[in-house]
Length: 351
Image (cartoon, rainbow, N blue to C red; front, side, top):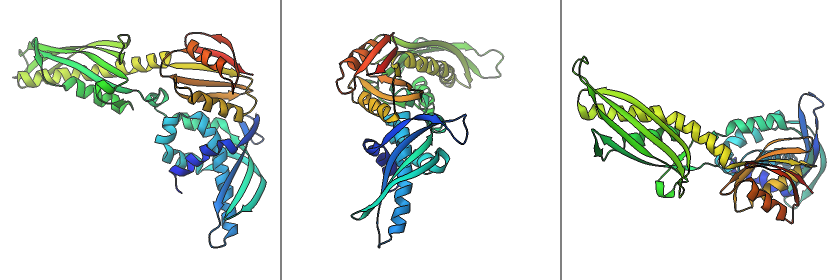
């Protein structure tokens, strides 16, 4: 198995991984390490037991990293970037595992199995993982649709100059785009342009355009973000000048709309959970998996974990912190006490 199966195997092995709490690095006290136990295995081919032994050790170290990877990155990114994660992280265990000891190794049928206790430098790993995700990925990869009406000299156009430009800008920023009837968020608005002047332009014609845009959740009238901009365009004829002005104003509006939308989504669809009394990373891993199994939750991932306190971002399909708090308090397998709940933040502790 290569690349893609390796990282998925590491995550699947979480059920077989145990760990203890964080501690300061013995090499560099500025860093904190997590001590985790993990198992790796490799087939014995042509009676090469020694080769299988070395491979199973390497796989055990990758599995140790897999536990941390699995909670510090969203599920969508874990799958979409599996090859990149394998090449840049799990294949470079020496860069993230400070030291390890072999707890047990044995032949099991046609496989050699090795279990280790590894000291993982989690700050290095968490920082690397955060850099792999774009802002849209951190927000759950919402699909953006577009419904932009265009007018020139007060007459409706059948063109989609603004929509095409906006779609390119949002796609370039990492957003998924698609048909508006299947989109999570719809960019709606009007782009209107009109003749400006031809005086002093050496034969060129100037048009001036204005655009008004709002981003709304599909099926809702609540605006997540809104912008208004104006811009000009010149060309050799009226049709071309009108087109240039619409493209120019759409380009001008794209970046501020994108930033406002990201800010709004971060505030309104992400619940920050401050979870106390997290004894081990194994407990944290189980809590993250429990969150991801809640239908109302789109995804969840860890932003920080130290001294028994974990900070998690929980992407909600609907609802907010109060809805999530009710679900957590009713959970039987992983009892949680809610200490405080605001609109988009929870303070809780494991029981």
